[in-house]
Image (cartoon, rainbow, N blue to C red; front, side, top):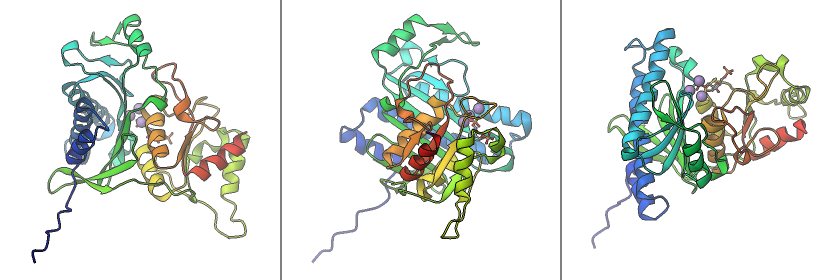
Length: 337
Ligand code: AHG
Ligand code: MN
Ligand code: MN
Ligand code: MN
């Protein structure tokens, strides 16, 4: 009797994307866009890893590393047939030249948590992908402007996060981890440094329903609303169990979110007296992360409403963000009523 060989082996990101394409979940063009993004993330991972060797730390170095991460993502996306690119690090979205342009709109934050670079602490890249809709196409025609480089630009990428087709992030930490959703759950791939490939390490990730970790920049406490102060004060109350919540804050949304995704709890960037809408950007940070959170059974809220329902009015719009375990986000929302 011949025993069948065990055929389950490693699944690469490229292999997984092709499988999704064959199953009709994504089309060929989106497959190319996603694989271009993963390629750029590998380049950024090596830039970040070598930052202190190639003199990319310090004030000027940080500017250079940001410029280089932005260029990596932008050039990969251009060759990957993306129609419109909007980035946290560009003033206006760039419409890719006709001959290169494809159908998709990509929004991204090339290097998030950039203040961590000099200390070799976690950073990340965040992306979201929309298909163009007619209203947005109308905006391209009407609101053409030129950026500093004279490129053709649009002023408005107008879709709410609920229209996202795909979103993900890459975290540059003790491992390089690429997390993605195409609307069928959340998958994590780890960069295998031996082969230079992302390999599937977690399928269908679910955020724990509750979790006793909170992640807020409490340095802003005095600037917060009284209702929020009360919420945070209550998390610190040991109560009958004798165990208060634990505080964890890296100052890198990607790192803080990734921990929340795996361990549960809540991440928050509230509005305060000096920043009326908080700090994080709806398009590049809050909406993609909220799509991932929801796909993992969690929630993303501005304290009152679902982040994915917010209709953007301008591309660099900021909103407060509360994201993580369903029960933790709902508990916070009750305090803010
Ligand atoms: P970026 O580096 O892309 O500008 O984003 C920084 C963001 C985010 O990564 C992080 O969660 C937050 O800023 C930290 O802000 P504070 O330093 O105000 O806590
Ligand atoms: Mn920034
Ligand atoms: Mn950012
Ligand atoms: Mn950034």
